[in-house]
Image 1 (cartoon, rainbow, N blue to C red):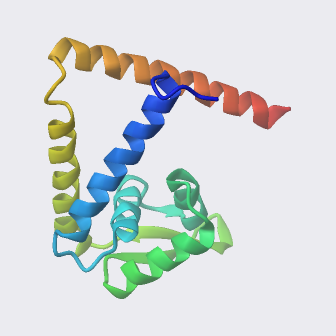
Image 2 (cartoon, rainbow, N blue to C red; image 1 turned 30 degrees about the horizontal axis):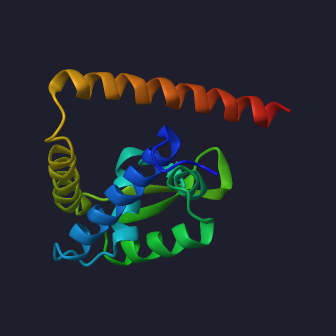
Image 3 (tube, rainbow, N blue to C red; image 1 turned 30 degrees about the vertical axis):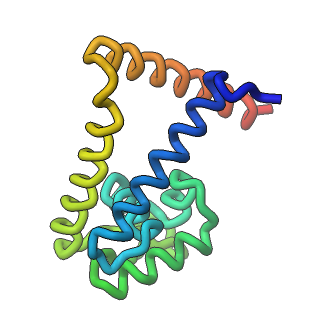
Length: 150
C-alpha cells in the first residue's frame, strides 16, 4: 500500500488537485470551452503542427476523446486540421489567429493558479522543488524508454 505522505502519493495528489482547481476556473471563466477542450487548446498551442494522436498521447487521453476536442475547437474556428506533408493519411493540428486571445487568457489562469499554489514556498524551496521534479521526470523518462526497448 502506498503511504499518503509518500512522495509518489503527494505528487499524484497535488497534480490531481491542481487539475481540479484549474478545471473549475476554466468552467467558470466564460469560455465556450469545456475544461478538456481548454487543456487541448493549451497543448495544441505548445505543439501546433503536431498530429492529433501525438497531442492525445501527451495529454494522456484517448485518440477519440482528442478527436472530439479538436472537432469542437475547429467548429469554433480556433484550430485547423491540415494535411501532414510527410504522410498523406495524417492530419496536423494548427492554431488559428482567432485562438491567440483565448489561449492568452487560459495561460493567464494557469499562471495565476501556479502563483497561488506556491505562495507558501520560499524562492529557494521553489528552485529546489523545480530541480527535484526535473530530476524525477528525467528518471521516469529513462525508465519508460528502457521499458519500450524491452
